[in-house]
Image (tube, rainbow, N blue to C red; front, side, top):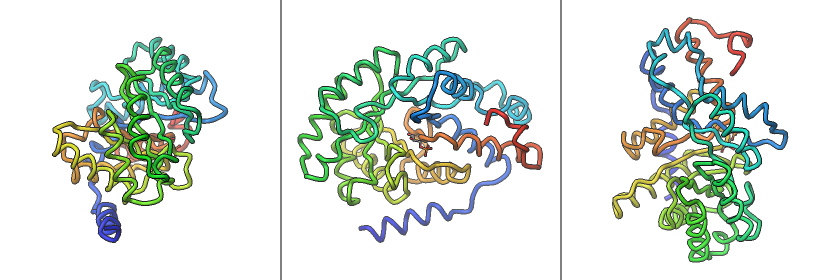
Length: 298
Ligand SMILES: O=C[C@H](O)COP(=O)(O)O
């Protein structure tokens, strides 16, 4: 029911936002759920090291002290990189004595248009290199041509290739054609063993949107009611502002409940969101917006 989905999605985004200390608390919660991401052709060891430093110190320490949150071990949920940069991230986090998991995209990200054998090999290599989370991307062709069983079989084989690593399955919703396809693909991905379902690669023309997310979280809810198994949710792509992150948390709280409000079951895939959250927390603590030199690592 597309009009009902759109109406409900709009309603969630127009809720009166939380304010003051409550807002700061929700923003810190959002920080712990971020998969801090760099997925660029010009990624280098040094920008991955910087990303890892930021994942360990997401908010300036004096700001956390003002909120009395400096000794709570706040970090991002994971760092997310291309397969060729996994070793850099593992090395940087190890040197920082930090247990944040490294997530790697795989399976011919972002299009998923390489042969299955190559995609499975890519997963195995990423796990060998130390990725503890694998963000696989599905083969959208199978959805658009209605080959549901083949889609299940592919995802199932990816699950086996991941071994002990957590598997997040990226649906690429902007290329699935309809909300019905989004719902069906979500169910197939969960039945095939995904730990998370994720909206987008960040490289499609349309990435994480609330109507699509609503359909996915309702699929998660239905799956939980039928099987008792909790699958996580990760919106990704185009999530840039602190206000966006509050809207996403509201969606999760209202549709899935408090159990899902943790990095074990909810992640925000984002490359630049953290900067805006840090800026808003700076404003909350000091009463003014920071100049860029005051948040140099943002
Ligand atoms: O999975 C994460 C996305 O690729 C990040 O997208 P973004 O750069 O629009 O935040």
